[in-house]
Image 1: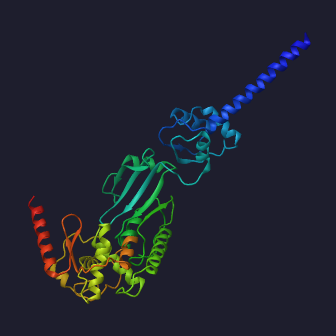
Image 2: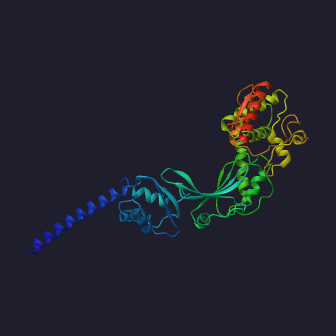
Image 3: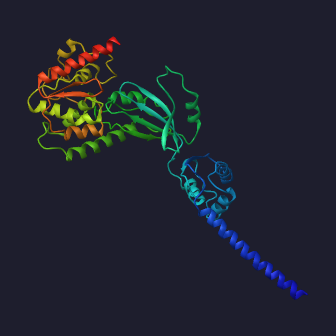
Length: 385
């Protein structure tokens, strides 16, 4: 009898071992297999969150077939207590193993909300935007003027209170150094003062990620270093026979190109016009330089130029002076700098607005006068509408 009992017990034990082994193999396959998530999602891990909470959220959102298996797998690989706070993108079809890796790897957030402080040529703004995981594109949630003239949207305060919100300062091509310093003084997540307004043209327009408490002068230093690198690289690759001898003069030209056109495809042609003029001893005769001589880069003029201003003698009035003005008139972007040192090969000497946002180019004064007449007609038609 006891022999039979022992035999049956052994049999049951063997069966249990096989069943347990099969269960472990099945669980491992589930942990490593492609997940059920049809579209990417953004998973937010609050500071101090436990894996049990996150796994339940993942199961509810259809990212995993079993929160329990995810927890067991994470525990087996010693990652249960390695969750990192933040917002992380979980791609479609991610396995539980991949999801655990995403949530414990750390590093910069890969999705979620950003607050962007935009420094523009005509205005600055604060934008609250959120990454849509399904399209991997940012969706604007709110935008307002930081000067205090507009009410601050509630979503801004909500996102400011979250510890996983990211911050960016975005500088547009063509802003002046004074505009950058002035706008940075209103970026409320930053600290410190800028020692002095940087040299015009020395700041690289770009999007810079910052953290709460970041130093304003340190950000200015980053912008200056970036512009030095861009200018140096472009100057090394410059075309032959340019009408200027130094990278600093190329930077002045780039700033004029930047202010003359907002159409990316035109920069090389605009550059060719000014270079052809310099090569032929013609004056540049460009309005943005005159405007800079009036405003000193401190804001926008906000009106048209007067004839007296076009005739007035300032170091920046290229209707009066020969050659380039003494300094850049704005901070040009990479494309404008590259256009200044590698312009298109044309024989254009003139250009004027064409009504589409771009310009009509001309080789002779007669052609240019025809283009100007067309533009005046467009202006008149628009004024009468």
